[in-house]
Length: 131
Image (cartoon, rainbow, N blue to C red; front, side, top):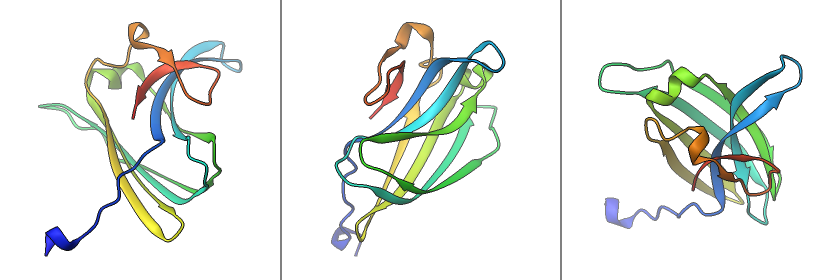
């Protein structure tokens, strides 16, 4: 039965953790973003995030976006640096047309840091990207 289920592959949708300046609080913050690099809009996006290690687990954070237009991005959450010592997962589900897509993006522990920064698609910023 399982072999008969077609699960479409997610392409051109990324999660990035970006280090950016906060004008209000005058601090450098780490923010997680979802990036839609597709040429179509995504609808009903559900994002479930959590962090874990061998002996620690964070609470689960959920976010829903009604629409993410083509070639755009949206902020998911502010991330505290203490979380970078954990594995951080972002489970993303969305509809493209009438097809549902689902993918889990994982930032392994200690991979989010200033040395790992790279250019982020569609954003004029540097961050850590998981495709």
